[in-house]
Amino acid sequence: MAQASIKSYDTNETEIQFDPGMDDSLKPKTDAGRTVGPLAYMFMWIGDGVNLGNMTLGASIIVAGMATLNIFQTIAAAIVAIGIISTIFALNDRLGYREGVPYVVQLRMSFGIKGTVISSLLRAIPAIVWYGVQSWIGGTALNEIMKIVTGGTFDHVAICFVALQLVQIVLSMFGFHAVKWVETLASVVIMLALVYVFGILLTSHSTAIAENWVHAKGSWGLPFFGMIMVLLGNYAGIFVSAADYSRELKTGMSDAKRGSLYFMPITVAYGFVIIIGAMLAAATGITNPAKAIPSVIDNSFISLGVSAFIVIGVVATNMVANIIPPAYVITLLTKLKYKASVTVTGLLALCAFPWVLVQESSAKGLNVFILTYSAFLGPIVSILLVDYYILRKQKVNVADLYKADGPFAGFNPAAVIAMLIGAGAAFIEVDLAWIIGLVVAGIAYILLNKFAFKGSKFKEGTIFEK
Image 1: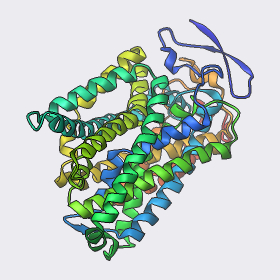
Image 2: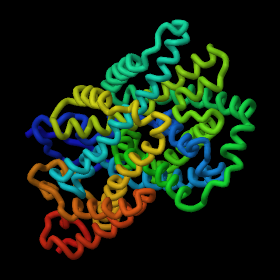
Image 3: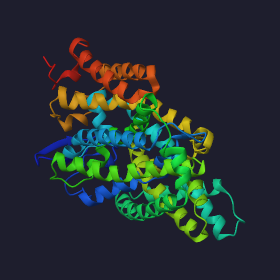
Image 4: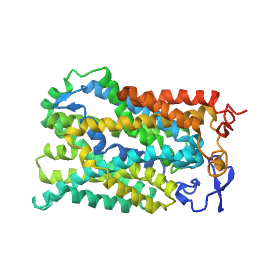
């Protein structure tokens, strides 16, 4: 077996033996290999937040011209969701930040090497679908550009979708080096574009927005809490794999500072985009923002620029949220190299039928999709947090995570059963799926570890070890 010496967060050297053929992308990041500073990290989350998929969630508040939430309820739901998102991020990124391991290796701590197959796919599949959704929206915007440039002679969204996907596959082959510069550029450009769109909506469409959204009755009941779950569920796949991002961040930062690197940019970007999405839908009745934005701007040159900004935002979002995590999963399960894995990820996204999910008639269907997969991701993140903070007291032997015949070999039945119990409970009330799954799975995991599976090797190093 090949051997490598890596340096952990506390600078203690640990000798790790890797499986033959394991790609370097799955091995722990050394201090020297971490190239993302605090400012670039914040830009990364701004670039991820200012995307058209998030805007579609804001637009979904308007159904058949009627708002399910008014402006105050929408803002309150966004603030609550962003606060929870930032907290979960800061808690779940710690193992990746301290030890440099990716999410698919972190999963072994709780689910075991074989159990990781199931739990990692539950993260990868929604990311691939979102990859396709984002790319279709970007393809729609690229088609708007081509129509303006060609005077209307070119009008083929499908061709633009495929072309954009090919560009993203090439960019993603450069890994986090490409992510840094793409996100920095996109975060600045897109925010400026959205500020302009926000100004247009306020000055030219304020009456329709006030009538259809601001003064709507809305609800502080299930629709309000359901929207919080939707906004949470939209990030469920990202913060469950927080280690994939924190392992790229330069070492030496406190937990509190790292938490602020999530809260501030996500509040600015995600919150702003949700509000604009709701305003666009209230003003135009169109839930696809790539079509709604050009419809509120009469100047073709400005429409061209806005559409270009949309395309950049799509690429930026996919680079962070929807390419790297599933690529790591494919690398782990197939032994493919990283570049081959990102290519497969991009091709699978082509087959996700995203054009169905972004139709006006499908806006609520997109919410159901988010709530459904978050019913599984809530339990997964709960199990990871309970295991790391409560059962193991933040003490994990990283070398053991890479041993094929070590204490994390096989699968942990307690984790798999707790995940299924949590997901089953979540489906009792789909609108609150994430929080129900999170709470039930966490409790079930503790009880199963305490009372079941006597002698399980997964109890070694935990408070239930005998």
